[in-house]
Structure formats: structure tokens, C-alpha cells
Length: 91
Image 1 (spheres, one colour):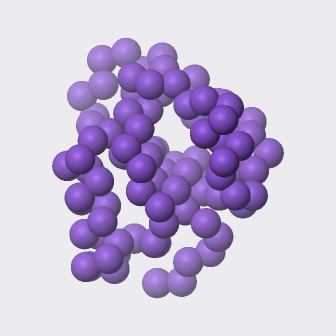
Image 2: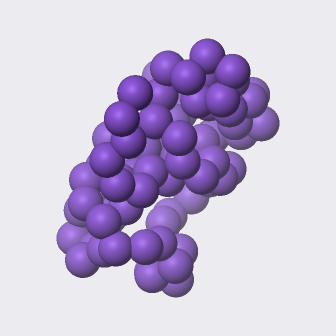
């Protein structure tokens, strides 16, 4: 698998973090990148966190699909897409 750019995975919790680690390291099914716990459904993405990411970073949000109110998630997606150093956002 050829990686293009920098990938940052924001995952909901420890279980999702382990899943992403296995998929990228052991199974080599996803593009390698940094994995951090940040529940993007319940926690707002801060300007500081976005500024610490390198130019051209692709964000991947990993969360459970049983989301009740997607308001914060949608805010996070819009905010990330407006950031000049973010290349793309996947969810």
C-alpha cells in the first residue's frame, strides 16, 4: 500500500485505537499514521490541536455508528475542512 501524505487517526477510545493499530501494523490494510484518542462525536476539535498537525495532513475520524446527536461531529468536520493544513477529512 502506497501512502500519500500524512495521516492522523482520531479514534473514540482504546478499543478503536487497538483496532486501527492492528489494521495498520499487523495486517497492513490501512495507511500508517498517528493514532490519538479524541471522541469527535462528543469533544470539539480545538484550534490548538489543528495547528499542531503538519501541512497536508489527512484526518480520519473513527467512531461508533450509534451516534445520537451528530452536531459536534459535524462542527468538527467543518472546522477541520476549513483548516489550511488539513488536506482531507474522512469519517
